[in-house]
Image 1 (cartoon, rainbow, N blue to C red):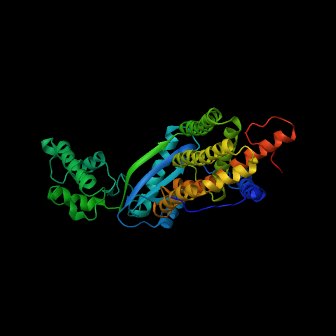
Image 2: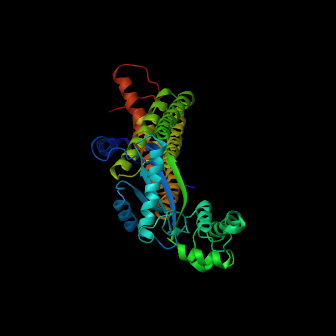
Image 3: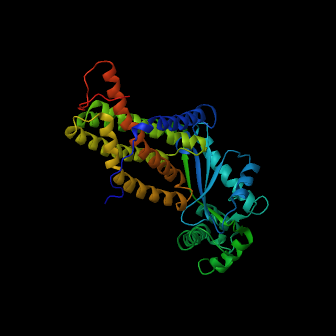
Amino acid sequence: MELFHQVDVDWLGKKWYFLAFSLVFSVAGVFSLLFWHHLNLGVDFKGGTLVYVQFADRPNIDEIRRAMDRAGIHDATIQNFGSGSNQVIISLAQRETRESALDAGRQTIVDALHANYGPAGGAAEAPGGKLDLDNASQEALTRLLTETDPEHLAAGGTASARYGAQAAAILNRRNQALGGLFTGMDQLNGVADPPVAGQLRQDGYLSGFHVFNVEVIGPQVGAELRKQALLATLYSLAGMLVYLWFRFELIYGVAAVVAVFHDTLITIGAFSLSNREITLTVIAAILTLIGYSMNDTIVVFDRIRENLKTSRRESLPSVVNRSINQTLSRTVLTSGLTFLTVLSLYVFGGEVLRGFSFALVVGILIGTYSSIAVAAPMLVAYQEWRARHGKRATLPAGKRARA
């Protein structure tokens, strides 16, 4: 399928406009990285705590943030995630390497949520206070029932085992049948004996949120992930350079790697300018766009090589222009459809995929642009440089290219 017929655009004649565009965005990104927002690394790379919370109703992010501020947590990141809008990730970066410090960060977040959503002085397992049935552990629930002994079983010595079995049944209904949250105390009926249900109504409460997962990442792990992410990017660039050197010529490989480096720099600069977090999913997106941009560049290079074999009396700039025009339909179709897909992912994918999809949206646009405006002009610039210095042409064009 061909969208454009007999296209005759002088791409190389516009190379100075392309150069200005690339310089503006590259320099803006570098200045932001060095002097403004810097590189906003996520918890994956800095280390810290991720607390996954599900709410009974749609949570107010501003209210949660105020609760964190009251607890002294001023650098927490709060965002919705999941298929619904009732789930939230609260992330807290930690600079200390001790496990106790990381556990303290987790407990601080959980205590701040209980202080905001529970009764005055409420906590998940506070002595003398009410027990949060939405977040209580089996051990805490068994201990409460054993201490209060609503069925008066202490004399028989079977209190702990019987109340433990009832606590397990209550939490199994909460976690399996109700998705982690009670919506009313009447849901205790049928799973707990009436005296036990009555005691829990008296000594328990429903916070309306459930902490269903906590991830703690140490700074050493974050440093190792940063190293591995950098090495993965460098190894991919080196492997592509070697492949293009073997498959084409060295200058093709150098031009393609420079173009991909240009794409990566602008994409990371866009993250810095917009103060978005760099996470593991963003690194995966960057590696994806490296491969996508390289594939688009190879298609253009392959057409240039084919045309050079049959057009030895034509100047190299003319061959390059014609090759770009011949692959323009393919470029617009593939890049356009992919761009629409990742744009939909960015708009409708939610906060968790927002960084990943943003990297792909920017990367596909810049990667398609660089195949035409960066990689191809480098071939001509290198050939002209060799011609000016009286060296043999590395690309088989018959005429010397005119500046």
